[in-house]
Image (tube, rainbow, N blue to C red; front, side):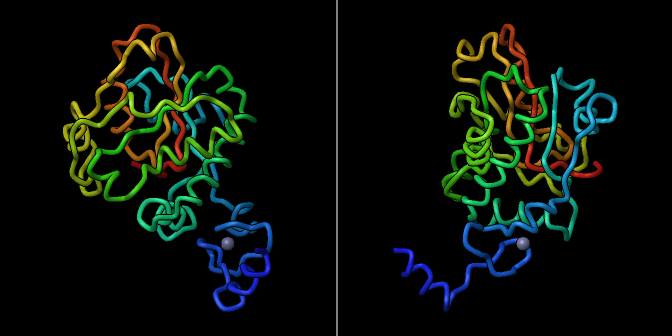
Amino acid sequence: MHWLRDFIELFFPRQCCVCGTPLVDGEDEICTTCLLDLPEVLTAQGDENFVERRFWGRLPVQHATALLIFKRKSKSQRILHQIKYNGNEKLALIMGRQLGLRLSANGLFDDVDLLVPVPLHRRKERHRGYNQSLLLCQGIAQTFPRPIVSGNLVRTRHTDSQTHKNRIQRLENMKGVFAVKEPNALQGKHILLIDDVITTGATSEACWAAMSQIQGLRISIAALAVSGDT
Ligand SMILES: [Zn+2]
């Protein structure tokens, strides 16, 4: 069927969803130049890791990281837009694989037992057709092999958009939003919570609030992107 694809591409060339240049054989959704030139983040750890710092004093995060720094009108924004609003499920898998490569190379995440996607509310997932955090998990698992546990941590309440809220309002808005169905399944585990974007950290904090009573549970966090400021 290769000839058929080539034929179709004569009329509808596949383009990089980030920069728009035509894709060549072996490239999928995003061109190699964009993949190599991601506005990326975080080789530093500890005090210099500003993703981890965002959670200090709020939840006992073991480690936290992100692949991209989210900036307006940048490649990172286009990537997130594709994944969240343009139905680009394939790109979510590709970016998940990239994040997984970093997690594997990093070393700090070696003792993670499980990948847990931040859940969407049922209604929202039905509307979008997928949960982008679960797709990221599936991509991550290809390069950072861990079992994915979805459906245990659930979102019990729909929340308004967080975009125009300040930090305190966001925290208020997120209270009691998440619940765990089977706490026993997470006992003694080190989970890696996967989110698409970390902004204030309110979502992760609310997830932790639903899990903090589980015995021996440790949490690390990885996201596709982190906002540069809050
Ligand atoms: Zn490109």
